[in-house]
Length: 113
Image (cartoon, helix red, strand yellow):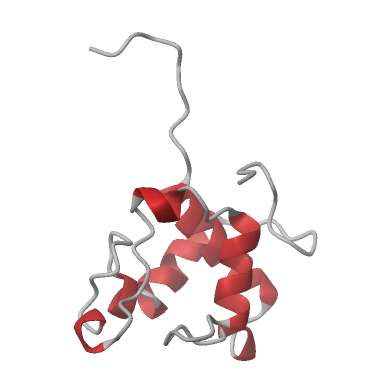
């Protein structure tokens, strides 16, 4: 997955704004730490995505996140937020989720201790 790809539609997400949207709308299912363990998660099957799992971190770049948030996810309880939020708000949420939970670690080249 190419993690350098931008949010679709020539949009630029703002992670700080996205965090506010995420905390208000997404934490009930995905949890504050993005682990899919929010208070509603236990009533949902399949469980909400854990953005921090290695498998999900390996496949969720900005375009994939944006699409899932905007259109919802078929076969899951993930709603189509594009029906209630503007694309800019979705871009902001996308950037927050990517930066806070998904973004691959950048190697500094320094040896591990």
